[in-house]
Length: 277
Image (tube, rainbow, N blue to C red; front, side, top):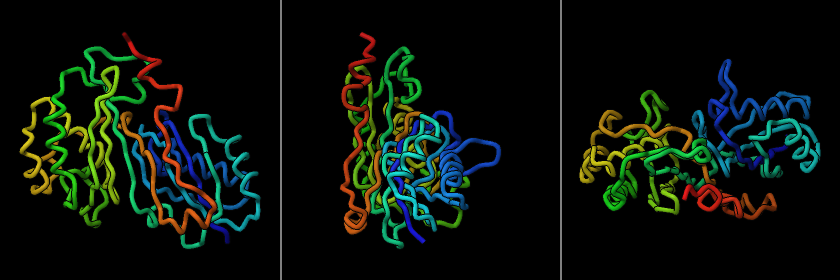
């Protein structure tokens, strides 16, 4: 058996998330159906993160095990010829048998994108949460600083998510940047994330910026360990899985070098192309 790593990106707009679901298109199903067609054997692709409906990825990672000896370059070309254009496999690499896309991950980075403007945009609407009211970014940053570190994030987990799993996670940083054209980016990096955690975190920070939640209430929200204590869940369309990092031994063993994906792509920045001014 060989273990293969897939590095991929996708626009999640037309999908009900990563994980296979009955009667709904998903990223995992899309990949598995194409792989089974090429390899002529049952295939299960395990992802580094089970992104929700509408959520996008620039640096998702998956792995599969196969008895096929098909060359990885041929497999890459075959995959991209069969899957829809809104899903792209960037690389296929053979990795050590012990590699696991989720369990081997050291840290992940998510980015949540907001268009903070009185009017919406026809070009941003698939990838930004349109927030029309003014936001106090300094208040949001002070609230976000409380979330950095090792905490029990039960209040930031979707109801019914991952029952029986511990809810302690370590966030290395939460950064809020104001970009051109009313765009706000919330970058979150941590060792692992709970179901809908980044979306609830983003929604809570927006509620702080709007004045609906006090900035000094975040400690109490963490202590409550109750989803009802936190703010709203931000829509999936503003969320991107930016990248997943693994031990250097796995990167070197597969001949890969970690390169941080860029969004927006160079030369295609919505801040320049879609500036409404």
